[in-house]
Amino acid sequence: MKKELAGVGLALLSLTLSLCAFAEADGMAPAIVAAPGRAVCSSADVALGGSPAKGQLCVTEGSFGHDRYVFDLDGTAVITGIDDETTRGLSGSYKGQSLGMTCAPDIKKPADDDSYVVGLEKSMVEKRGMKPADAHNLAVAMATVEVGRTCIVKQAEAVLMKVPVRFP
Image 1 (cartoon, one colour):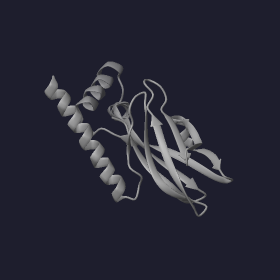
Image 2 (cartoon, one colour; image 1 turned 45 degrees about the vertical axis):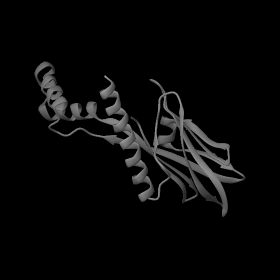
Image 3 (cartoon, helix red, strand yellow; image 1 turned 90 degrees about the vertical axis):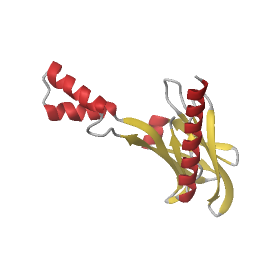
Image 4 (cartoon, one colour; image 1 turned 30 degrees about the vertical axis):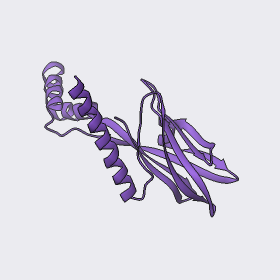
């Protein structure tokens, strides 16, 4: 049991370090690995209208509910919302400057030959009489998961922060 937990801990640490290295290499703010019930934040120095400010995006992963996103500048909450709202985009203002934030879902589709997809597809064809192509498409859709989001905060067209958010 302890070895399994240690393995999981090492895997999460490895994922976190990999995401941070990826983020820094791409000019993004450090990645966030969301945690249920607590805020996890990523900060970066930003230039707002030519003035320096400290930007911070915090994500609180909801346990069986919506994730909450808060972007603040210099300690003042500017944009807040839940995951569904960030997909469409949210706006706010700070010292007269209009800002916008979107967090696009990052999805992971299973391979066509994934055993779960193949089994589900077979079951739908045999038990529900579905056409194989329709059953395959539905099985892939059912096995597709959201693994994170990429949040972008902008002032007009200028990107202030870009933060990868990952779900464990």
